[in-house]
Image (cartoon, rainbow, N blue to C red):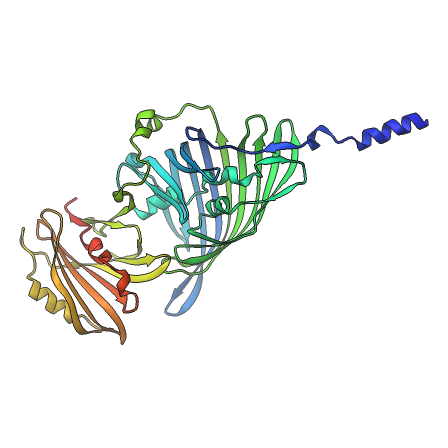
Length: 435
């Protein structure tokens, strides 16, 4: 080999290939942006349940599919802050210890508004309240609000890394609050106008009052000319401590996301439909519905009350405040009265005071509570001890126009009772009969 040929070879070897040129790995979300998404989830692991003081691991397997169109309504911190989503498909199935369950979104609740707030995603259906299961179906899947934040937002070379900012990490982890963020992005390759990037690391945060640790290993595809992420495979190991309303769990999950632009949007995201969505959620958006066990009543309640148990006759709920336990409520059947009538207040107070294990020491309040037309609600609150623990116990008798009656009993530890502040009455007055 001549010296000239050797020099040319050295220059060729030293010259970077086209794929090693820097690329602008950035998205710039704007109001009016629209895309279609397909999300698939596969999850396996175990729940750790505690019964009679003993822990038991129960196998969990779940799948889900979501297909929806989304229009961005507002942007903050270079991420969508508010968006409207219209679901063509929203289904989930789970098997817990051999028991199977399936969930789907009602046909009249396909439009969902998602707000990204400092304390997580607030989603609601403008058409009316949904159940907790239906809400989780459309707010607990991977949140596309985070996508732009997974990128560095600047020119990078293959091999470069960057930290994932907290707002995107919180949205990706579906946390109410983020405590530790060690997510890092890395540009892996650029070929044929497509950039492949990775997101790896760990996250810690809080969801529904429980500590959650996630370990993430994700890869995505970025269309350089379009300036958009088009595909993402998000794998995570999920370690959740037991919380006030959820059991401990250890699961492995894989989410695949496909994102398409330029497709026709559904009528549910028309200009008229979007114009009807307020900039801030209405007061009623914070309420969920829960049918009674036998379908004889419906409970429409603030979403800080969580249904944690149900039998053929009873519904059990827990109230959280900033992730902390405040009180437990039980909705129980009560003897039916004649149409338009109810059990006399004195008779109800006597029965409430004689509840098993309850030792009242001071009556705090006894009065009728304003209720919906045709309904009657009586509130009887007393301090005392339940199983030798100081508590505030509030019993509500709720009667409907046909004489149907239930009792809503709320028990709060004495040191947490101040946080009730009318939330017990809001629960009781949310019951409607004959819906």
